[in-house]
Length: 167
Length: 199
Image (cartoon, rainbow over the protein chains, first blue to last red):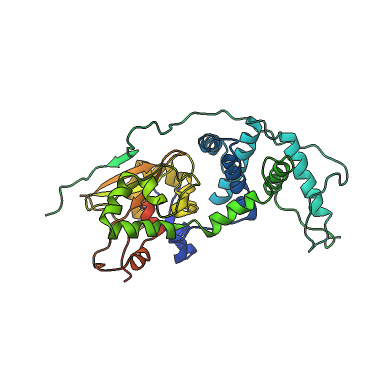
């Protein structure tokens, strides 16, 4: 029965409950430190008033539509990769950071790791070795989507009762 | 040589570090602001908050009416607010209606009461299929909705976050709020589960 639809196989039981009972009761934790950092950065910027959360959702949902998963990539990794792309997109759009300076700082971070003996804390340093330019600019259309407009909330879909209450 | 350096994280992680470094350097974000937010999400927000809301609604009819009428204020009165919980709508399960929540665009979710969403909530298959065929998706969660029950699917957005008020299990008369709260699962407040007594 399962898996005959045109959409990809979806078995939440195997995805989720296999991870342990507590997982379907409790909230998940961030799987990677950078997931937490990306999430927290968007939240912090919005709370600091640099963009509204509606602007974030518009940007992020556009990226989700336009940046496909990589073959073999798990859904959580795709999600946070899309999150990071959305974060760069909104930073560029708002003129807060430029793509080149992000690429340069990322390269400086990479070199900082490589220059740090294993087991020591990595500190950010600039000017290690020579600089290599890199890419990373992403251009995206921005679609509009529905916003709350003050009407009473309505379900997006209803599957009506198919039988009168069983007697 | 291989022991003389620290292996850098993956490129996307380096870009996130770069962004945070630059934002801090430029004074856009204060030092430690991001870590503080992450800490709240990892340690303070989660379904235990939502369970308190549900248990109170089950035991206090006045609170229940308030919750269904003005979810934001009723939830805030228990101390759960902020983080895009500014406009919360609570939808009530009854013997006639089962509610389930999705964010079709991305992953909008009532963080103050549920914390971070589970992975499946963020996936394209859930986001599309629960709208097209909610009953079959719910069946995959081992939740068979009887044919005489209507299923309503609610689309959370940046502006409106939905929380399901599940049905109180039979056989819990006289239980305390704490005892009831222990029955309330995360999935029951998304609508992909219901509250049951332990077998």
